[in-house]
Length: 245
Length: 245
DNA sequence: TCATACAACTTGTATTTACAAGTTGAAATT
DNA sequence: AATTTCAACTTGTAAATACAAGTTGTATGA
Image (tube, rainbow over all chains, first blue to last red; front, side, top):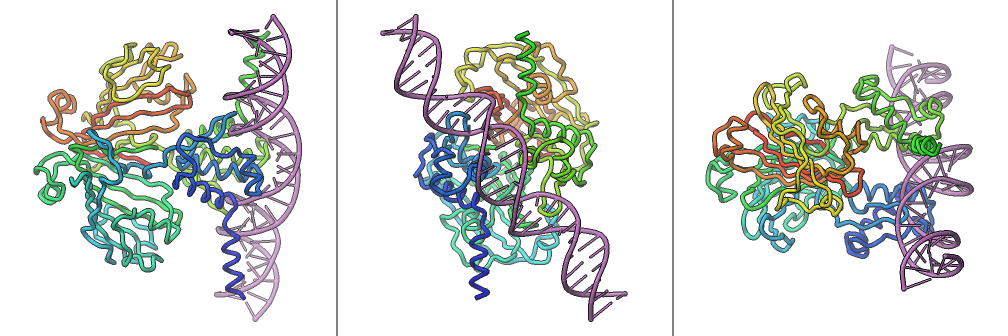
């Protein structure tokens, strides 16, 4: 009985505004609400979901914050093109448009449990230090050209079955969100332009010494003290890294 | 009399939560509230400023959004290090810390009114096309080394006396905010690593062909259809571009 | 002395109500 | 027919209130 109660409590403890946020988010991503179209008005959402306006507005504020909609006084909430990725991550082609069909991911190193590297580019929280980390490397292709090499360190805290999941066609963030309720809240990053060394030039198939975009990132999440650390090498010969903020 | 009324209305039409936001922002920036310390509790702010909690919370939400504070349930609102700049802009030294005293700005081209360049890297709104643009070039130094060359295009819409202002030691954004109530709301940017050509290598005092970080930015503001366009060349030999989001 | 319980804070969520302000299209007027 | 006015929407701001949930220091208990 206690277990059932806990489950019930956990069900009920999800705030109503969050539930509405998730519903609307899902419908925007799945195309129920098309880009540029209007969401139901706040009063309509109140009636349909049996909430009051401040609660509905709380959900809409979160959607605005995350870039799914923007609002116009007197008009309504307008659906935006879903945000590519948080911070600076998307790839934009300089010559031709990039559809998802042209994007491929190759896992160079499947997620494995390791100790944290020493030295490490970022400061780790105590909890992160105590547990090990999960390490993975990926190489991304656009039109069969390597453009994106990323090295990721994720603290191995309460991530059951993580190393045995398949990442081939799924976003790392989608897996963290879907299976572990981990959401990216923000982060910091350092960017430099460097010369490709032997390893990088080989991976990205460019000449040694060619300019490469180098990014170090630390992403913070809704889990306190749980961060995602990434190092990225980007071949910007034919593409650019694109970011909204 | 009508003029006075309009002025009064304009005074009164500033929402209360916005007024509180401005007060707290000013106090955080001026150091009245130190980094890491607690802001007065919501109820205290209610009492002091004669508002209700939802209004106070609205102001605090804006401060959280802009990175001035973060909140912790049961504890309070904690003051953060004021955000450097929006998106990706700050310079972080790789060897030594950078204080403002080591930062210098040289105006290569004082703000002048021009026509928009054709072709232009970004799409312009109708209002922007009709009016001309204000053009300016700057070179930024850290420890007397050139690291940052930026070219800016700003639509010449309702910016009286802009070209005669002094920019030497003031941020462009501070001037837009202080004199014209223009605030940066967001934006998009493209990043590449490129080789320095003759002009860039000379400006940034590096060898021709060395990698340089190249950024194209379009910032949106609280004025509808008013954007700030920048092109940036960054010498990342000894420094990195740093961004919080 | 040490651990526990609790009271008094803090922020988080939610309801209800009211009016202001921007947008839009239809009806009334010119 | 063209313009103006206005009513009926929309979102924005704000009050007053209530309870839930997390934090912290104190007082009570062993």
